[in-house]
Length: 229
Image (tube, one colour):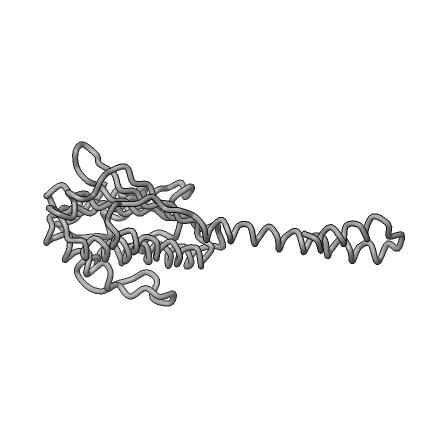
């Protein structure tokens, strides 16, 4: 700030147009650096809401740091206690893996798309007395071939940017073990989020794709275990 004040003072008393232009550029650079520093500091000191489970909080905090490193705005909404969830419906380790795998996928999807301000929102809620965990992002859509093979073989839309396909294979094993349903939602309007992945702990273990391109997906995906809406 003292450098900025000093440069502004010099600018005010300067009569040389060329020198004034140089000083103005210096002022703008100092201001931008200060602005970037403030944003970085805000990101680094952001306090996420707690789940009450230290293992899950640590995993989410780690994912927040990874997202921030990629200049992605990461937010978390928790309006439901999850002690019953991990004591009765899924293990802490499986839940941690589920969250981390798909938040990482969201980061990769954002980095694979256009140069946009990335956004990820994770929500842990209760809907009709059923736990739901959703991960939303504004990254690129799934490729049709990826959707057609999810859970059947290792497949990824983002092989060149770090995707391996292992996450979804592990996910389907966890969903089957815990009888959790998977709902993939694709939005035609890409803001604020282009898609979401929801894990619904309803004891049904069904796979639903709710998409604006449902008609074309029905023509391309031939699987009896997927409901396309």
